[in-house]
Image: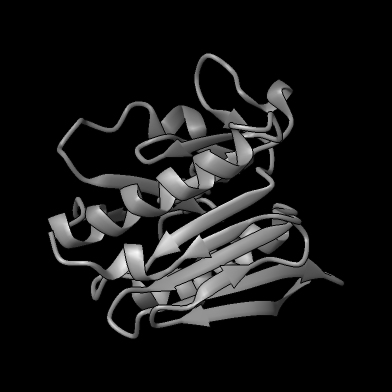
Length: 183
């Protein structure tokens, strides 16, 4: 029996998807659908976004965006990180972020944690995203990874109520205690 030929999906396929309230991404041409995030997840995303905006936008070093927003890293890689920082304004187009942002951030959720830590790491690395942060709200931890030799390596991390300083962005000091506070 002949099997159907599978083709990798591209951005033009993705825009034809129905708006069903879920997150649609392409990882190496494969459609991945995730449920919309929970309030606890969004609380951490927005609190981190405020601190990143205070640093990057206040001094004109970049612009902070949050999902939903397509990041087109290649013809078959279209992702929606929870947060991203763009330092090259030419990447911001009318339809998406087209090219690798300086930083992408994923806040782990039970339904997406393994994908964020395995498949997305590979796609972000293949797309030459220089910095990838993983925020684990259950563990109250932020891991800051930097691309080196095609792989991500942890350059710093913070946990609990620490103040996280990043070696690549002098003066960036994130108050992690603000991320974990209840509403």
